[in-house]
Image 1 (cartoon, rainbow over the protein chains, first blue to last red):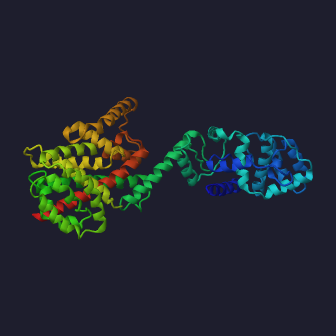
Image 2: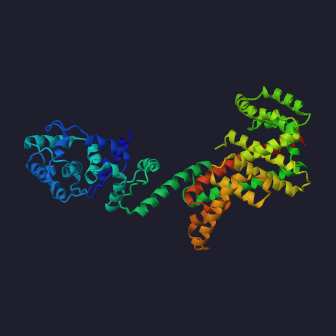
Image 3: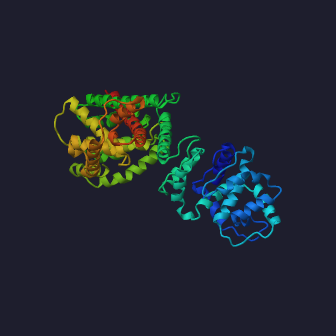
Length: 356
Length: 157
């Protein structure tokens, strides 16, 4: 499930950020959890987490104050009060994680329905204790709940939150990859900024572009021989340019050689396939395709001879070559119905037009 | 990364059909002309083996159509693309400030790469790298096929 890597990243983010602010999370992987939390049956006040969430904030703070096991929460109090759409963490690094949860809970109490009020402080403390031990996954997934009650508009709201929030976020390649996959469905690409870098939309988009380009450069490095050891975009590009130039030059030379070998353009084809079959067989081009084509294309009396010759050689072909041949023979069989060379010429012309 | 055999087959098939067209023209050609014809038909064959899925192939076919013999390329494959390219070029010419002084090594090399790949000047950087990847694979297949053809025909002599 996709939420697991996301949650572990955000967990490490929470512990590592320390004094930083934790921001909302945009990836789709949390929607399931969000939905679950929204629709979670709030049956029992004592046992369910969401019961706590339905408290109005001042009451929650009071109860937090009163509970004796909640020294942690006390540290988070000043931050909780000015919470309105943003999350603040106490400077107490050791208590970062549990504090986050509590600020979330009180924050959620803001937006949630106030149908029920927790009757007893005992219940509440029990809930709070349970809340401490609850998974951070719920914390993080519930965060977007607070600042964006309507989950339907989460894409737009997330982008706005992204722009508003200052501070550091952790960049994760998996998040980018997922977001780039999601980008095909969503109009926005969600990325996370690196720690300590600017988070305005331009630099984020630029960073996403850079990531894409770097991923493709890795493919190119694997493709071009000798590029694996080189690091640095400029040198890799150098190698790629050299490779492309050398390939293009090779094409030129080979075409010159082909032109020099044969006086006519299609003479080379005749000579190749009549006289020397072995080299083509051995090479990676299955020459087996040729006999299927040549009898029709040549259109002369040598047809039978070619077919016979190639059928003998066909037995020695590897199996895959034969399979390929089967694919090619059936469309070419239609050409057999055209007897004269004139017809075959026009047919080839049409076929070339179709292919091109 | 070896090019797959289906690509080579497709290329060879297209190429031979293209060469057949030249044979029906029935005129004497010098060696240079023949070489040009061979190379051109090979390039078009390679580009058409891609079936218009990549930008460089479409650019190559469109260029070939506009410059060289029109009978080699069918009209339908290139007009729509050439129209789009023409409008793109006009736009680029009007918007871009011409800066001859190249900034940085990467920019310089990107410019060179753009000149190498057919239709590369009109691509942005990301798609340029993607296209060059595909172009390299296709060129390799082309070279392999031509080389084996040359060796086959030269052994005969």
